[in-house]
Length: 415
Image 1 (cartoon, rainbow, N blue to C red):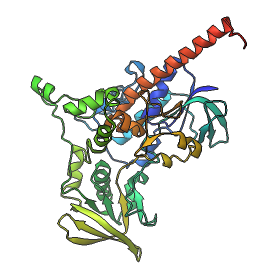
Image 2 (image 1 turned 135 degrees about the horizontal axis):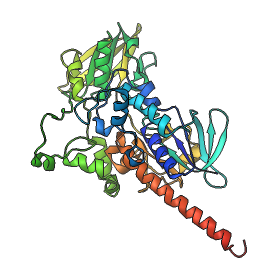
Image 3 (image 1 turned 90 degrees about the vertical axis):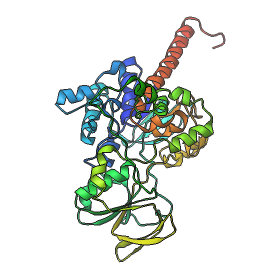
Image 4 (image 1 turned 30 degrees about the horizontal axis):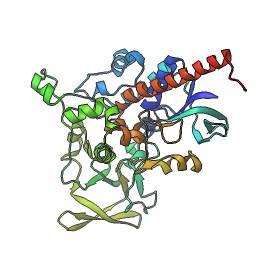
């Protein structure tokens, strides 16, 4: 039986595999490398995370983004220079080649509890295998969220931002983008540049943008103490959430859930402001009351905070409304297995080692945020996850090997 199967090949899956490989622990990892980033993020976008917070992780800080950029001659800075999407995806693919060469580009179509312990996995190729433990590193895949008042629209009129990697397909078409986060702001700016007639609709009365950290002069000691830097940005809270997921895990559940829901709310990167403000028409402070189709278009009724209403008529609506974990969306998990997993607000309840209530089934990334904090919504969280989770697996594997050795030398009576 295989020790560990990893489902998902983004920053979390790749980092965990790199650590397991360095420890000599048997594993297989399945998926199309960096697929969410390559196939579902709009070409031309840039990451909100600074360079130092956009690594994929291996023991000894091997092959960082900085090292990759130096090898390829790509502009890089720890802070102040945005990381382009194509740079990050190329880095992920290079990391796969160098650190996880045994990755198998096959999709897992079924995971169920095995009859004799462990888990049975089915692959799209028809192959089946059993593993003692399964690590789910599926990221945002499967979890795109569309508000209920838009879900009735036919797919030819409504899509989620997750479905769009090429803005050029909307050239010359009228589009309403719903949302106020980085996905909405980035996509609206890129659609405008592609020649679409785009409008941005958001409930917030003003768009928010992260500030660019000054890099032209050293920060004073007081600035460093009052607002320390972290992989989630500056500030004491950000530093705590970025550095101490283990402590966050022990906080009261109600506090954890509210923090994950509200911390670092919708905001664009500082570099996106000039692409949208003054260029893309904004309907701010507006909620979508209804949406109907007629004559090949979508008619949106918008209501402002003062109660006034207005209409917007477009050819297509893109819901850039984020992602929400819902375990039932993981259709490859058997219904019987899903029923064994304790959840809160759709997310699995995890132990301090990322293990769910189904023994040997682990969740990482966005699905782990309610247990370990906002850092799990970002690639930066893969550092803590890969180190901590593989340490746990190594200890478990060592105990198993030790018991096997002892049993061979001193057979148990009656066995």
